[in-house]
Picture 1: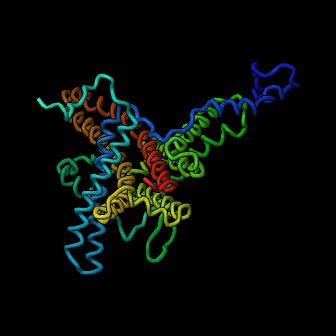
Picture 2: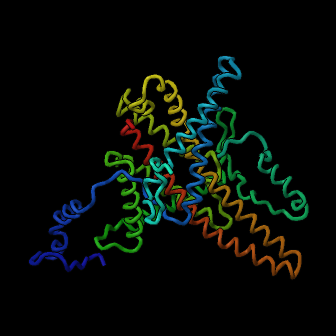
Picture 3: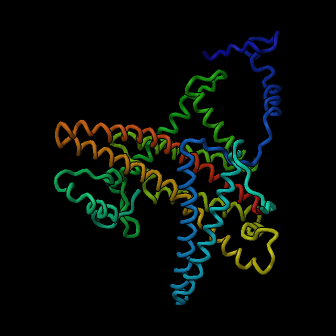
Length: 128
Length: 277
C-alpha cells in the first residue's frame, strides 16, 4: 500500500525513485497550467443562496445602524451632548448600511453571471 | 467558557419563550431554547470576582478541536503518495481553503492561510457536531461568534497598520471623491468598517440559533400532537417530515455558514493587504 504503483513514471528508474524521479518537473508543469488567481468571490450555489443572500444583506445593513447608534451613544455619554451625536451618527449609520448593502450586492452580482435570457433594461435614450 | 455571576438567571429569551409557551410549560416542558442552556461541569476558580467554569460549551469546543485534529492528522501521518480515503478528505479540505484564500484575498494573503483554515474547520466541525442529539452548538452563542469575528477584525487592523503604515487609512478615503463630499464619506466609511465584526458575528450566530430553534419547534409539535391521541399521531407525520427536511437543511446551513465566515475573513484580509479601493 505504501508502495505507489505509478505507471506513468519514466522508464529505467531504479525502484522506488522512479515514481518521484520527475516529480519536480511535474509539479512545475502543474503550477504553470494552473490559472492565474483572479480576485473574484467564490460562487455559493443556487440552492440556499437566495435566503443566504437576503440574510447577508440584512445583517450588513442592521450592523452599520447598530454601530452608528452605539458610537453616537458613547460620544453623548462622554461629552454630555445628548442627543445630538446619536442623532447624527444614527443617520450616518443608515448611510453606511446602504454603502454596505450596495458593496456586498455588487460582490454577489460579480460572483454570478447574468442569465442569458435576461431581458434588456429599457434604455434612457428611448423617448417614445 | 462562561463568565457567571451568582446563580443562573433566566435569560431574556427564556422569559419570552416561557410567556409564549407558558400554557404548555406547565404540563409538559417542551422548550425550543432549552438546548442553548449552559451547564457548569467543574469550576476553574475566580478571576477578579468573576466565576469561571468548564461548561458544556467549553467541552464541545474541546471535542471539536480533538475531532478536527484527529480527522486531519491521523490519516495524513503516513504521507502516502497514493492517498487513502482519509488522507484524500484532509487534502481536499486543505486544497479547497487554499484555493479560496488565494482567489479571494490574493497570493500575499497565504500567510494567513492557517488562520482561515482553523476558523473554517472549527466552525464547520462545531456546527456539524452540534447537529448530534444531546450535543451543543457552540456557535449558537453570540459571545463565541463575536470572539471569532473580533479576532479577524483585530488581525486586519494590526496587520494592516504593520504592513501599510499610515497608508492603511486610505481604506476610509475612496479615491476620486471631491473635497466637499469627503468629510461626509469618511465617517460613513469608518462606520461601515466598524460594522464588519458585528455583521460577521451576527450572521453565523443568527443562522445557527434560528435553525436550531425551528428544528426544536417542529420536534415539539410532533410530541405535542402525538400526545393528543390516534388522530394527533397521524397528523404528527407532517411536522415530523418537516423536522427531517430541516435537519438536512441545517447540516447544509452549518457548512455554508462556515464557508461564508471564511470567505468574508478572506475579503477583509484582502483589504488589510490592499487598502486602496
